[in-house]
Image (cartoon, rainbow, N blue to C red; front, top):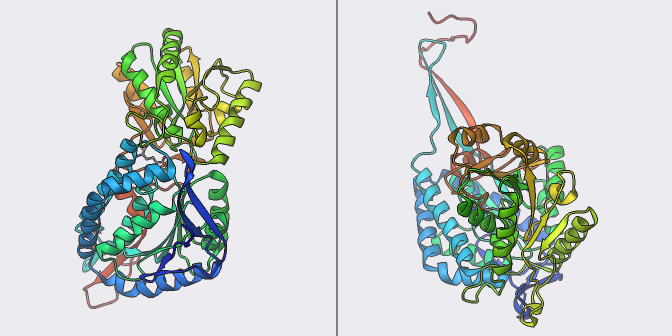
Length: 495
Ligand code: UN1
């Protein structure tokens, strides 16, 4: 445990030049330590950038179908390691085992999907204004990509970023969250075993300062960031000034609408899963439930009854339904928001504190928490809490629900439960979000669909699917003149 883990740079596991370290602990039992990791320094970042830059010319020339084969190998290895990786994940960041398996599965899906892109990566051919001229567009790599990833999807999110980046011919430097370094290490070991050439995949451990150093390195071409709005804003400001490419995926304040004609049980199950799955620590988590006044009281009552029954326990324990929060700061943050909610006049209907069982005192557990009697302007209805806290609000009508749902600065995920197809289609049209579910909860995006949000959730990019390729490639337009003479666009008519 005392041995500090190493970064992965240029195909080698290399000790950091910095003396600073941090420890990764099990959030369900803080006496369980996963390892000690380096707080990497700007000079470690510099080495990683040089390695990534050095590997770029060769890697760009590897045909995408061959890159796809490496991803297929990575998929097979992830499959082989699925159970051990999932167990490590639960131990390191707390989500319950079946969700951790889902996280690894998301990376496997992403590898399959992106490997297939190796035989597509389609550009377009088009017509020319002129007679003897051919035009087409092709994708080209951006260069060296810095990938900054959070702890809540410690394998899936690195895969969303690194797989398309690599397939498009970029080289990458992954800087995972301080709360999930062991998962990132296993992920990169798997890519190493899959055979990605030295320097194409690099891993640098560290916290916010290491991330900031990566963002600020002058020889990085692109930053892809998922995390808090504060850190994202800093990355955007720096990348803006330096004209680096930058894609951001940040907070959410996602809502589920429940209309009076909804399948009540289905909407309830969706709400519980959306709000308390992953202990509410998803950027897609349901943090507002907008329930039609005709069914509001019954829905609230049932929700609370079921929330109280959720089994809060270490994620490796059989039957555990909700694991701990990831760390002490998150526990402090969620506790603070509960106080804020109460002082704003919301009614705390259940939860709002750490469970009393002494076995759970070893970790950062928090009870499933429900607020009612909320107003859209309250901070708990506007700010991302990132914990198992959901606000239930009574709405008068569909229009009222849409107005409340849209009334935040975020716009990631949204959901409506109704049996009325007209209402459902209006919701698809009118909800201000990058994702809308009909009769499903706000969580559960699939890897071949664009993922991301509008407004302050992001900066206009979408990860995953074909849209994700747009982050990691730039278009080149190609004009081929086979007339043997000077043809002038816009001047010669070509007719
Ligand atoms: C995140 O919380 O940052 O759609 C990602 C979902 C998952 C991904 C969440 N597939 O809930």
